[in-house]
Image (cartoon, rainbow, N blue to C red; front, side, top):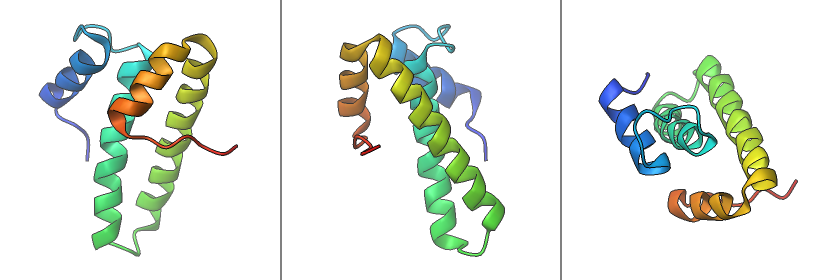
Length: 92
């Protein structure tokens, strides 16, 4: 499932302040988080859907790389987004 255009615009506006700033790491992390939540719920119902599980792992990995980039370049935004989206810090 993909997010509708309206959902994406709302997430982008909440994360970056402007719905046209879809390239900002904050916006992308917000979109990935929403997709991860959906995929997690999907996998609770469809345990044998291995392609969806692989997709979920890829999404989590992409989000982790973006969070690492954000932490390196803008620590305040990183802390804010971690708090706002209720994401735990990774150990590695």
